[in-house]
Amino acid sequence: SILDQLVSFSKDKVSLKDVISILGLVEQDTLFEITAGIIRKEPKEVLGLLNRIIDEGKDHGVFLVNLIEHFRNLMIAKVTKGDMKLIDLPQEFCEKLLKQSQHFSLEDIFTIFNNLINAQEMSKRMESLRIPLEITLVKMAHDKRGAGLKLPHPALFSAG
Image 1 (cartoon, helix red, strand yellow):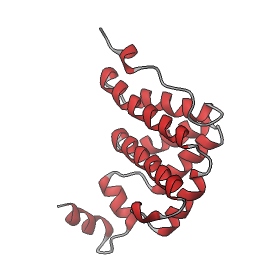
Image 2 (spheres, helix red, strand yellow; image 1 turned 120 degrees about the horizontal axis):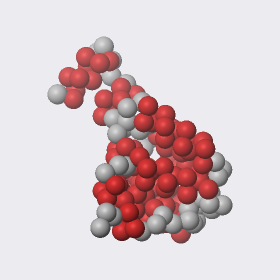
Image 3 (tube, helix red, strand yellow; image 1 turned 45 degrees about the vertical axis):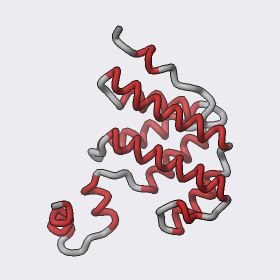
Image 4 (tube, helix red, strand yellow; image 1 turned 90 degrees about the vertical axis):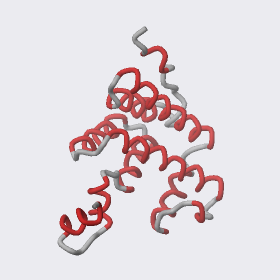
């Protein structure tokens, strides 16, 4: 049924952008933009990008999973130093990943993973993903390394 939607949506010529739109995924370029805002320590820019994603009707949860995968790809790029056999993306994106990975230590990437997972957990207690996502992105973009500030433990936001 998704293929039928794609064909009718795209007038018989299916593009990658159409697939991304129908599946509610976030484009790779947007993930690179968010990460660049974190690197440049621009929390306002990162919040603006998140707002744009939300305005485009993207699912918060899908975005968060895409962002986690992006940082997984940055980790792979960093560890393999450019051997991109483990990343299922076109070469152009693999080269961008390698460049972006140079701005993070492995510890930074691991801290970002923890922050993003904490945002998922916090969202279950708050019944909202937007607020934990905003807090996490601002903290990552505010810190001089892009990752060192840790999100409060999710239990601090539980009702009981």
